[in-house]
Length: 167
Image (spheres, rainbow, N blue to C red):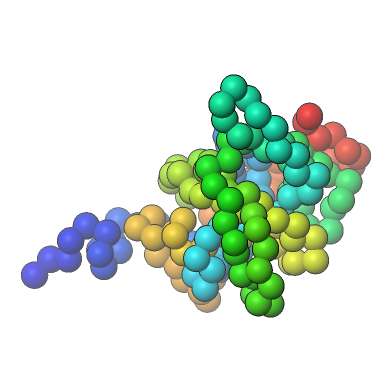
């Protein structure tokens, strides 16, 4: 008996490793290294200087990101509508109230909407966690491999040596 779509049918899903470069085109983030984290329910994006504001009747956030690990000199600034605020427990057990936004992720030629919480991940190795809710029905994960999408996206920042973020 065949499995229903999305329930065990993996042959049409691209395979990704435990860490990958991906893009968030609606946030104008051409490349960010993400840890593929099936242990995390939601996805998280490293942010700083989060500012809440209203645009008409919509709550919005403006925030900065350092898309490259160990590179505080590379900054991008983004805006997005807030879809929720949630209490999130991090891997250390600390509970934090976070903004939640929805954006488009692009990985292995697959574009799909994801919900992302905004938090400061300065002390963490990865600027983004891609959680299991964002991954389900889209990819097969091979934890023995990494960068199965290649490292081409990383070239987006080649030659960047000073704060050239977008405000």
